[in-house]
Image (cartoon, rainbow, N blue to C red):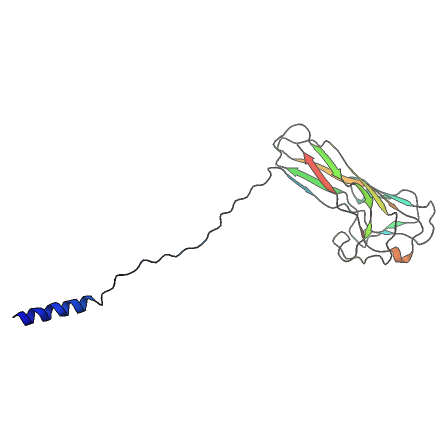
Length: 197
């Protein structure tokens, strides 16, 4: 009887030695948290385009030509000092820059519009640099090809819905004595337009 009891105890101990306890595991991952803030007021403006002008080489009657771009439309673009040049219809028509303001919290009265870099010189710019259209760069950039821009209003009215609008127009001067190598696409330096309500 004693032998049988010992055998059962040994068997029970051996059976218990193969039982294991499950270990806890931990997995982790990083998570980003995003948020954004933006101004209530937004200002958008289109580019200023003086258009493509057909200009003869050599000396021109009246010398340098002044092109005036108003805040109306392409029909208001004129050659100021020479009748020997003409507007080409091969590219986009001239157009003043059109600016729109939305989200102003002022909703009455006037805002203040301003330009930084309103005057400058054109530099040759080929490829799609001409008003987002293809026009080859000039082989020899012409110097003294300048522009002066101005706002239609420095104090645009703000509507009751918090919107406002104004345009960017101006003049450009095409120098006299051009050569064939001067023909091509040109672009002025970027200007900054600001609006304060």
